[in-house]
Figure (cartoon, helix red, strand yellow):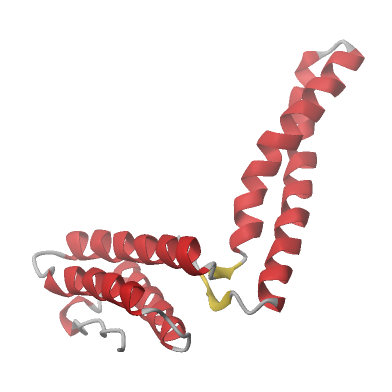
Length: 154
């Protein structure tokens, strides 16, 4: 069983953001076609594609449906098959590092100096730690063959 294709829409080619969203979802589907996917996953992805192909009213609704379908497909393949896009873990851990490491470091630094205005100094430290941890997880996913050959830009 194969994944369905997105319906080409030449009438919407003037909208650059819409074209980028369409191309990004199309590239995701091309990458997923290269992988061995179970039939239940293919059916779920095909239903998302059908929803995108059925939208015909406006550019705004189409772009919204493209982004919604892309997020649903990425979440599905990450949860069920452990496939992730390039830099997925780096982007995720950038934020987590600031929250998990940065805030406590900043609070400790601020408390030790007696100036809680220095609380923000821990955020960039946490961001760097998170990026390093995320990059290592991305390398691990690539070695295991779980990384899709595309980078998602929101």
